[in-house]
Image (tube, rainbow, N blue to C red; front, side, top):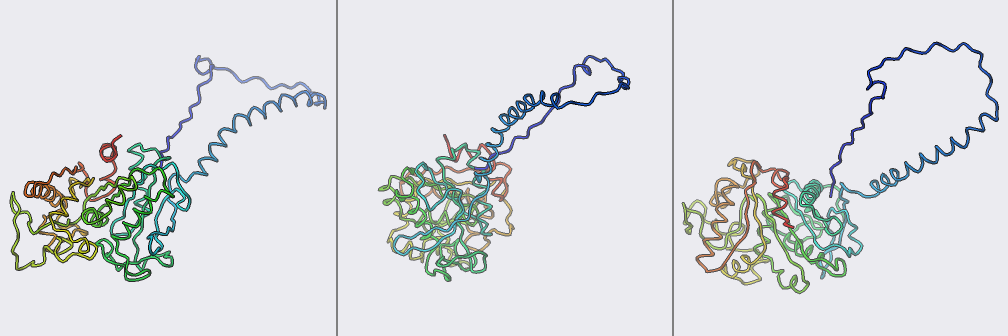
Amino acid sequence: MAVSAHQRRETSAPSPQAESGFCYLPARPDTRRRQPVRGRDIASFVPGIAALIFTLIALMLPMLHARAADAATPATVGQRQVISIGADAPYSFITFAIADLQKPQTGITRAVVILHGVKRNAIDYFGLGQHLLQLAQLPPSATLLLAPNFLTPQDANLVADMPLWRRDDWMQGQASDQGRAGITSFRALDDLVHYLADRRRFPALKEIVLIGHSAGAQLMQRHAVMNDLDASLQQAGVTLRYIISSPSSYVYFEASRPSGESFIAQASATCPAYNDYRYGIANPPAYLADQHLSGQQLFQRYAARHITYLVGARDDNPRHRFLDRSCGAAMQGATRVERQQNFMRYERFLSAKWNIPVDHPEFEVPGATHDANRVYGSEAIARKLFPQ
């Protein structure tokens, strides 16, 4: 976690003469003839000079050691690392982290995975995650921060045998079509979670927190609804938690959509596929279809999961350039704020309809727009997300 630098101000105390208010006249020049300095006179100063030098060295050594330690610890920059994930058919994946992921990390009890937005700028989100964890005062020695990178063939510094997605397909859960083809982004998240839950790598791990903002939140919200990780994580003794902020849209569990103060099934000739995936669960991807769950069964599992929703209170621009304005998304609300409010009401609507308790915390961050740094940039929010 990056630590803020405290500036040190050096102040020199005024001399006793200046404080007393006295003014001294300069001394008259000494015109007396000076005697040459003899060797034995110089020798008499050597012990004192040597003692002074040793004293200065002793005083400076702690400072030099501190600077060396600071230089040896990359406290602010995440290292780009290539890891191998996928137990059955391993493939390469890029993530940013400070800890060496090729070695077991015996002291890590919590892993925080923060996912980038549409720009795929994982290194920037790593910095955001560092600041968030610092605000939450999480111990660096026990906390692992990762920023995985979903990439396209046009991105730089690619490696062999890694999945590559066409443009924004990764945020919809679709499969990679180049590099290591056929890897859905849902599967990549599953494989990353299994990598972290492996006791050979992280024997003390207790919790994994997945954070997604904007485009990353679209993937995270759908993964939170559709993944089937519960049994394997329970067996490993690891808790999975989600923090989802400001997605453009949500996946709904049945055909109802907001209508005034209630929710009703829509019959829209202009948007006949509004309940298809990725806005509903009709015509789902194989990742969900293979689980053979009804909407009610899916909601029951989802309701029991640890999920927190956030949105900036000023993320209310209906013409925002990254806002999904398709008809399926528009049925959920006009802005990101409205869509979160409606989805939270929708959870309560289904809870009453199907008699399934649900209690997912949600926050609107005062003053924040769609900027992730504003959404996650306060100590108050950090403490809510990571209560001590």
